[in-house]
Image 1: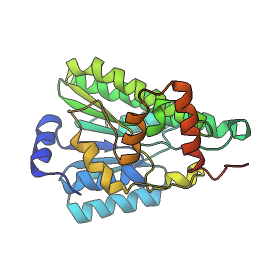
Image 2: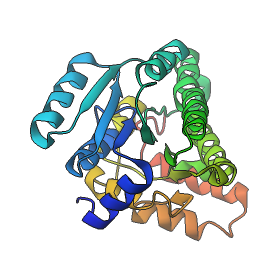
Image 3: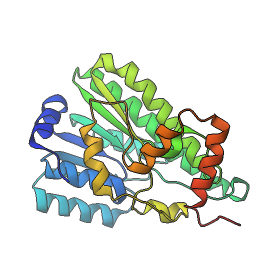
Length: 271
């Protein structure tokens, strides 16, 4: 899928030609980079793995003839986020896609505490840090902007066997909904994208097996098309089905239902 000419022109008119995408070496972030590059946007892309990031940058430039700036760093470390901010300070970034994140699964009591704290640093703290900076920058330069936050279908209730991950995405969802209202008068659009299972490297790191997973190329264009139009988008049938059909269900029951859903994804079930 690719962006329509009309949507591309609208985005460039509203937000300019520069897009920042974090976590761009795999999964949704990588597909977002490809989609924006196809449409002629210049990119700043981030990732932890230097060779993957530089190879991907070269590939995007060679294929789409757009400017691509790779910034290597682990965004779970606040000083690395500051390095990214400093490296992009001179650029008129109009669209910021905060995609970098990871998940964990299994019984919380058996989890590695350092990993769980690292998850919060990346999924929550870095999102806060970058949203704060780029919103201030957009306002100070008196120009429109857009911030896209990657939420999840697990953001809408507690999820046993993915307790910390679901809580981190609940933070992102709540944060994004509030920012959307706060920043709208400043000319800054905020979108939360809450997909269900997606084919990517995410599942292996989270120790999950993804059933009914979507292809990244099937969700990125709908997400981009929603910028400036919605506060939240639920890409994919499973996410829409669960979120819409569970709206009237008591919260305690939602938690139990999601426990069963998660049991189908995790490799830890029965342990």
